Amino acid sequence: MGLLLNALRVALVAAALAFTAFPAKAQSQVAVLIGTTPGGGYDVYARALARHIGRNLPGQPAVIAKNVPGAGGLTLANYMYNRAPADSSELATVQNGLPFEKLFQTLSPEGRNALFDATKFGWIGSITQTVFVTVTWHTAAVRTLKEATTQEAILGASATSSDSYVLAMLANQLLDTKFKVVHGYAGAAEVDLAVENGEVQGEAGKDWTTLISTRPQWIKDRKINILVQMGMKPHPDLKDVPMAIDLAKTSEDRSVMEVVFAKFGMSRPFFAPPGVAPERLAALRRAFDATVRDEAFLADAKRLGMEINPVRGEDVEALVTRIMGTPAALAQRARRVEAAIGEREDHDEQKVQARYHRVAPRIAQSRRWRGGGYSPAGRGIGASRPRD
Image (cartoon, rainbow, N blue to C red):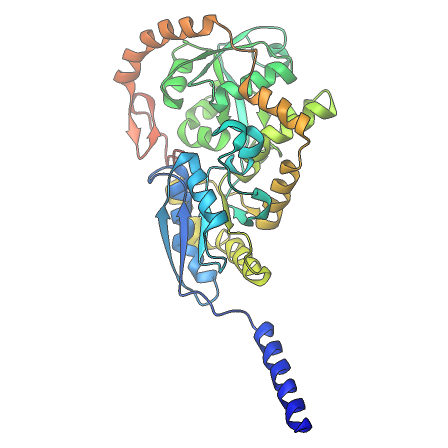
């Protein structure tokens, strides 16, 4: 009897070891969930990944893409954190600032609608990272960042929540620039036209990857001065353009910039629910890494006007963890900078109404759209980058 029990124990231990020694069964189908509506930049990037990542996943499962919009991405993020299965059968992408909702509190008071801890998601990677630039037209008096600290420059923006407004206010507060911002334009295309027509002298918060795909003539024909770039790392195309973060006067100012710029370092992030087994998360990350280097994927991206500048999942995880560990006082200051509290000029609203009504007829006459990219007066712009 004793020998029989011992044999049974050995068999059970061997079975347990065998179960843990081999990875779980590969998925037959994986869903990539997208926290935005169809047709925008996040959608295009996610669907491109879905078309190609299956070849690099264990078992080469079928991969489907599905839009789950709502509440600025909170609907999907909350689902992934609280209800999604932790078996790697569902991946997700949301707006790049959403992981920091509890810090910036842009979608709900005190961020209380963010029912997740961003540091516990299984970060898979980001397809690209970017920088934002501040530019002035070639005829403007202000041509450098140094000149912007001594002379006023009138910039254009859509709304006070837009990057074009927020980053101009950040420069005023932390870099001592003297930007005045006319806000109220319908969108980025209208601001671009206002710059070309002399309604304003430039704009801040211009995504470099968007600029080179939708306004390459501005660069080729030297129509703009590039004053500064804002992001975590300099863009290789902008070696001679100063980085705002390198010009921070104090360590606290630099920390504020890091908090505000963090999302630029993970522009198109993908993640799995919390609790995914380490070996499954590792497989997802390696599949992502292989996909963003895959020739077929890169050809697809080129056709769609997508810039590929990938960030590994481990680096996205480290970034999220570091930023979410921001001290409360610093986070509060970052919120004030991003909201530009105390910097809104009362006369701007009246100015923009008059200026916008003057420029609107010309906008209507000159508007040309090519697959989501805007080309004034039909000038060729090549492949257009997906619009957010």
